[in-house]
Length: 181
Image 1 (cartoon, rainbow, N blue to C red):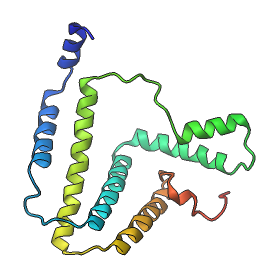
Image 2: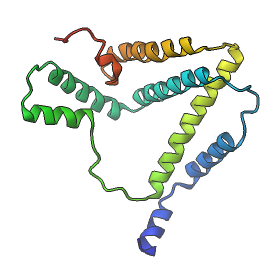
Image 3: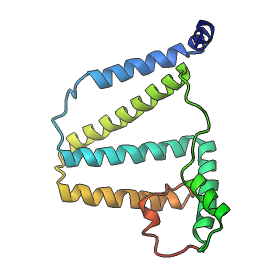
Image 4: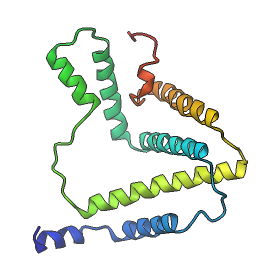
């Protein structure tokens, strides 16, 4: 990497959003959990699952292009799932839709770093909000409750998202009870 391209990438950095992301990330990562008591491991498991799925729901609500692409992909995946004996081309198409690969070679850029910092900050903010809500509600979550929640929450959320066509293809595919027509 030469100095000219490095300088060109450095100039493209949006200064204001980067400064805000760094300040918020620094505060949330470095500062300890100030007003909350330690959470149990089952409670943390529930919070992590809720954080992941709420981030996905927020992404679907605010990104119309991503929502449209997922709807098209889910429709095609469902068509391919209903075919009992797939040809080799259909199998390749199913695998490439289900597990998309990036064709771009990895290359460092400041925009990528900003996106990564912003995503980490969003996850931390959502996590801390749920941790604070759990602290305020004074709910004690045991292992059995956490396991039941980890299974039922994604299934319920996927059922609701399925009404809009933006469900994730996770464990709920195995519990759908036959082929859809």
